[in-house]
Image (cartoon, rainbow, N blue to C red; front, side, top):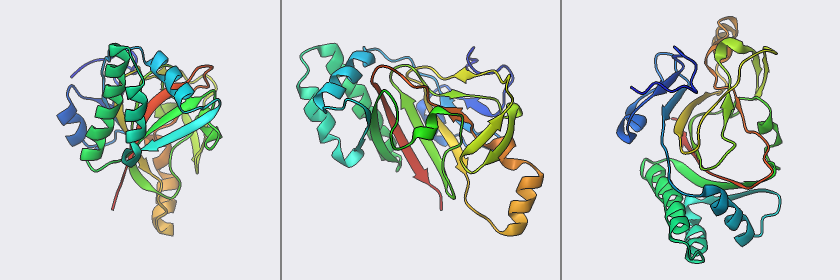
Length: 227
């Protein structure tokens, strides 16, 4: 198994795998909150994101393109005359196809400057509210998702968190593919009380944030709902 210098040493809440098959088949138990498949991608994704923002006339905010609408991305790809850029867009389409084939609800997200619909994501938070699902994600250009160790989480309430003021911050790399465990569905009062006493969310929730950027960012996101 790969040892990465941007994952806390000895940190067993993130499982690192070496291939795509292991990525999909590895679960979170006994206590992980992320499964990570490190990748190094070829291509100028900063330029892809900039050209994509111009093509879709997105000056600020975010644009979502669902898997079922992927022909919009293909139409953009056809406007490119640089083979390397065409190949880079092909990587995005291939990732969407890969996640969708695993029965994951998938979309591409383009963000310019900052999120509008999800403004809290620039602060440390947890995903989901009253939901249980697995969140899949890959970022093609910087800045990539940042996270902190659960030992530095003081409190989780809904999507909001309090963390130690001196908590070290870690960051995934462009191209990395990861899935995060989201378990926020309401349970009965006894289970909720026990979870609070045991600090289950503080010990297990994936606490992360997206940095604001002065250039367009492109990523693929997928959710797999749990029964």
